[in-house]
Length: 127
Image (tube, rainbow, N blue to C red; front, side, top):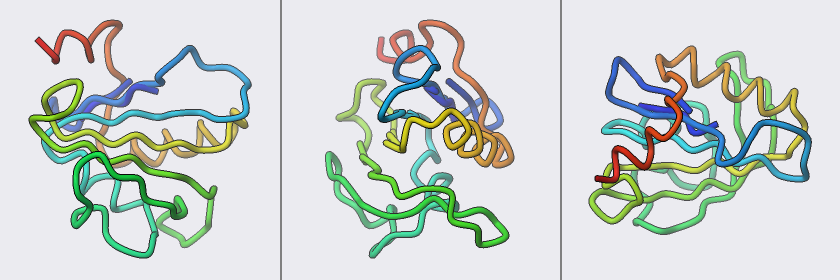
């Protein structure tokens, strides 16, 4: 998986910021790859599991550490293959823009084995 805040889980996932890191009202962290939905589900607590979410839906919930600490209230967008930008399962975590919150959420993703995406990697995966 890759983070866009940009990353990959054992070369299967992509994660990246949807814009340059900085200070703003909202940060969007994109995770794309085969197991991106179950991976993000491990740190997301909402009224229903992300694995049951239909494509192109939004879920409100919280990002929670393995110790049970709530990091932030978030809205998670779920996009299922093949109808996503990359053609892979993808998740976008919309969190508060505080750089410390964004950093802590991405650290949780790193601990799951997700890596930063390379520049242009999401677009490359789309083709």
